[in-house]
Image 1 (cartoon, one colour):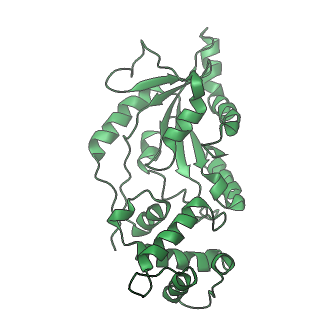
Image 2 (cartoon, helix red, strand yellow):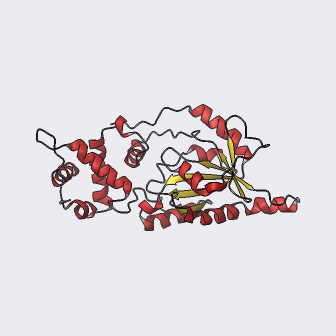
Image 3 (cartoon, one colour):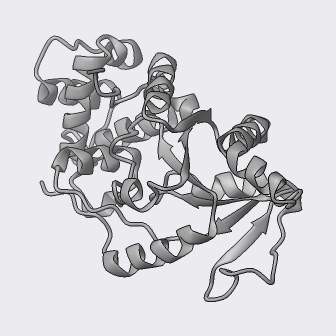
Length: 283
């Protein structure tokens, strides 16, 4: 099965970001903590290389905590800031605010020396579909969310959101679309729901996920479904369908229903805290 992204206008999107990025001090990228590689758009590395970078590992509450920590250490070693985050929880936003100030302290100090006091940090928030960008912006902004005018970038559909006296966000929804050649990336995006299920073979996705869980989190399927993992992924999938009574009306196993069940329980965290991708090994 070939995993394909939604259609997008890559050239136009890159050109738009090249213009927008001149207006900001910081690029804030949301990735899914379960798949930080696959949910990262590589275009950001080139387009944002002259800017401070903050990576928000969103949905960290669904991801393996040890691997969350490993990813934070990896990003720090790469010269970026990183914060574990559940964008639905406003309680985590103080940590984000503090790291934004830390990431931009040189810029803030430079402005202070030039006599520019209390100028807000301007940040661009980027992220692929279904990674939680809108949820983050709404949680961070809260009721204080307001447009600001008389600045470059207000026109042509772009919107500045004043979070508080310290931070303004440039909201540019939907401008980034990853292009991937590696089908593993497509599979990982499909697992978390970033590619519409209707476009894919869910049974095949489920069997692939079972194989991944057998390798990386042995025992998790047995604990959840009371089935043996000591067989091939296809046989485990069949046992899952039987155990959960996924049956068609006329008899026989309903593999579509079983696949939907497994994918839903993975995405919602009912299987446990799972991270599919580990940071690259040092060196």
